[in-house]
Length: 120
Image (cartoon, rainbow, N blue to C red; front, side, top):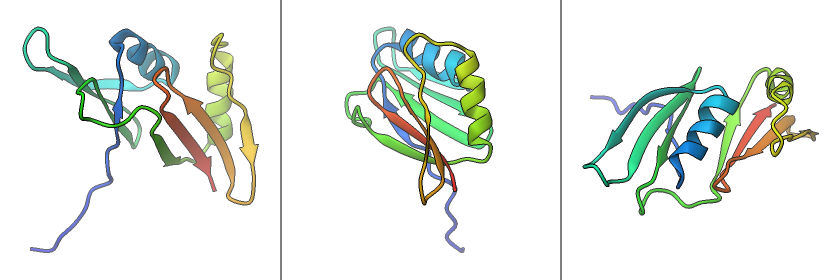
């Protein structure tokens, strides 16, 4: 059998499930694919996606470190910026950065994780 890898799925540490849903589903426009919880008091673990972007959000103590940066190569980053800006969120109004690497939109979730959407 030949070894083949699928694209990695980052696991981001989150604490408040309502804040995570508000950011990833309502603001960023992801879809909730599934969620899992062990027992009634256990931590939540969920998958959200938008197109080819797939993220796991975890309340598990050992999963991820707050402040993680995820690099997402993106086509249409200026359109994404316009879409998010139109939502007029009071605390989320990130700008576009242009440099020799490309055009970048960095979003910071409520837990300090950075999503760096970059169009080369």
